[in-house]
Length: 342
Image (cartoon, rainbow, N blue to C red; front, top):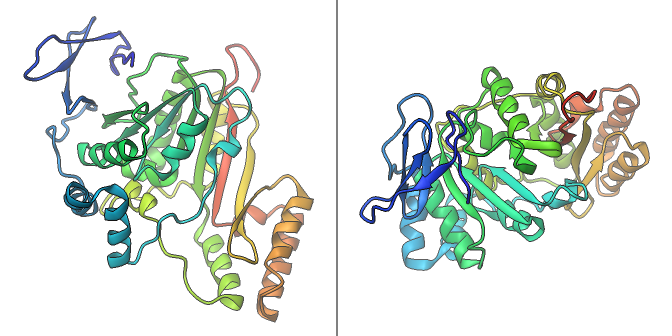
């Protein structure tokens, strides 16, 4: 992997020392440590020492993985702690247009469930995580699934990526992962500017955002009307967010404004809706027949109250307020070329 210095973007070279391998910047002479062949790129401020232990979830998984392997350790963890694996299959490659699956960057790999799906379609995949504990768990899971070709690195600051300008064809990030890196509304514009730098002109950004509390409550009420029971949190997302890490709560409008100002094209917004079999239908919100079909799937097993809620959702969609009632969005945007109008 051709890493660059996150501070001056100069190429890095690997030191010849065998006791403590390092990456050396060819310009500013900064040194970046490698632990278990996983490079660490700290932020501008002081960062934890290499080998940090991460969250309690990661510590428990690490200990279990050493004895039982990644998949069995994950299943046992979910059984004890009431989480699920997987939460739902989004098929992230579905959102990546043709030509965008060359060199991909995933920000926040979690347990690696999404990473494995992306690796199937990417020519080259890089996954960055905020701690060595994250990296060891992700690396072990990928190795057991035979995906040693995925590059994993510890990057403390996602506003300083160790990648050359214009070197990516696609970038995938969820709001849960941004919370794991400590990125909130105030930091989003700086992170997005760095994404623009590393994406080639025409490169695709896939951004997963949570909806408002109103949206999550609306869907919960519809679910409760016909199918009682709350959907459990996924292990993948639990690791990405990490307990105690700051929640970003970006919303939809703020990120779109920031990305448009940076030269990204018009967004395509998709939303996952549950079907009658509790599967997930990911629908483009600018396609009214698709949205109507998704809502109709929830009618068959719902009560009168649920039907009324869905009817209100349809009216809200026609009035332009549908996005306020949805719990989650996938936004696809292309980086405009230099001098090109977004």
